[in-house]
Image (cartoon, rainbow, N blue to C red; front, side, top):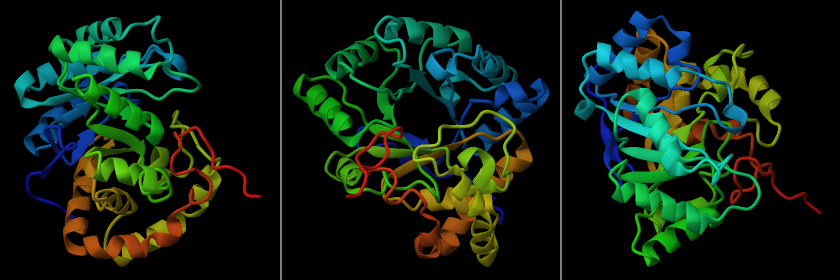
Length: 330
């Protein structure tokens, strides 16, 4: 399927900005491309309305890999002739070494590597163990007041922790989180589709930003990725790989590709504002844009058609962060 129009926009939570339904990620993306290809892709994406870029400094915790993908993006966007006001930048604040590595230090480093003085939004990363959520909210609010970014969200937090952060921010007159960036795909639905997050999206007014929608490429047909990919909560990756023939069958029944099915499915979620993916060529981006044609033609049919592909049901608890499995059944 092909899509020829401008990419539509949705609001990233009740308090958030209007964003394109597609956003381009940076992890293992810009640093795997030839410079001229990256420049051309950025220019083409912005011209199609895909002007949200999720760009992070990957040098913390499990991401301590000295990647330069953020530096490459900053240089390429300038070479592409894209003015800062013509694109949306979503950054990351990591908790792996927080508070030793302060948010102020992190954002200064990240933005300077990209070559700008501000982001539009940031995502506060995931964590294990205890966290002083009050301190996190307060430190984020100080950066909002300083003009470093306007809105913020979290990455794969538990619903309870996100409720606490939201309520504390509102009570103290600080900027609350407006969205959650969650693992969400044909196979991994328990958290975004579960009741705890459903209440956050409904009563709490938060938006959903879907990430890892291809399971590192597996759900798009690259069954044995050769690059580093995301974590495997619940230990279900082999089952996801085994499910691909059914993914392909369902996609073909709609005249679509597996990648288009994977993307279109996430956008059927009532709170979904946008979906993040990495694209390394114009052809790949064009294929992904075709998901919008699939959504327009068959949106009401997609969820029933892929019900059997929900693999983390009963494995990952709906209230959990991505690293927490469901309690054992007695």
